[in-house]
Length: 493
Image (cartoon, rainbow, N blue to C red; front, top):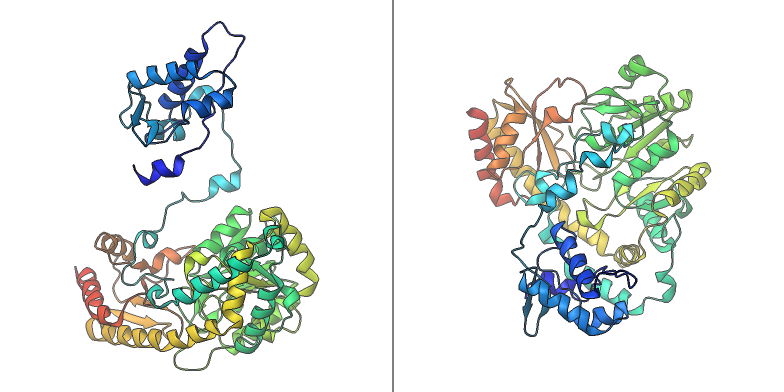
């Protein structure tokens, strides 16, 4: 028997009967099963209830159920195996295509309106990098180096001692022990000024961006975004009915003066000052002070996404923008996805004290509270030193991969690509010297298992530069040379 059949065993099928109807009970049961199978409500391989269990559930004798099952078996809707039970047949007579039934509602159902904000979002597509791991994927850490055995031991240990209280709804802000551990970490490593009470645990930086947008902005308001920049910031603003104002980024980060010329009175600015995404540049001290001064004068908010600041190779990590803020205008976002593993879906947002209650109220509306178990294990992982050790272990590994990648790019494509933003993080950007279509090259590369992110796709407006964003987090140093030669062949065609 297949795994799916085992998993579905014992699931109750919603079969109803009417004792007052003239139609015999066995026929009602037969028709109910048959119609559900034909319309796709019951799928091939699903295990149905035993005749005794269904009779008991319907409070009738077993005979009508036996007769109905016999008819369904005879007509090929059911299959039966000794010791395995009865299940929906794999080859079904008169079956309507399930995909058509699910996704193409008939005109008779009438209009099916959705919100304008949802309708305006681009079609959902599962990212290519989510299907399989390959060279140059952006945002992917080296998963094979993660101490999974330690994580599993902590998970098992906590599961064994977990109390009933942990099964209850939690605080919208998150588990106090984890918030305290994060507060101690960001104060020492990132220069963030905060107390544990200001920290909210979220399911990754994307929820933090969405939450900040909901709390700080009204529909129709404008916000600065980096150009080029993180695409899901644009989506968060779009879904809230807000307008993104693309502000150019140069080698010193967001051009504050240009932003003021474009729209001086925006309510917020979304920035990645420590390692700009995707260009990888670091915002200069002058620009940071300009941005803070603008926020203070304009009464605006700055949302600082500090997504991979732990890895800096030629100098010490850059202190956070939030640590320079004396007017509490910065909302700081951090994530564990790049350090730990993406499916962890755990991050945090550090909120000015006067906004904490409003963020908590909005969080409660969205999903009530974060899951308890993952938070508890993460708190132990940090407090017992595993988190810091993992960062120390990975820093030289990523540094070596970055060194090899830069060297190979200069050797193979030095006259065709300009490298930028390689001082930190797990990716760098390149500018194409020619006017080649970077999106077309990236699409062709994807078919050949090479994960190129086209630089032009990160622009909200017209792209001023073309090139590629190359991740090296999950690409082994020994595989980089071959991957660069592959890139060279694509660029030179």
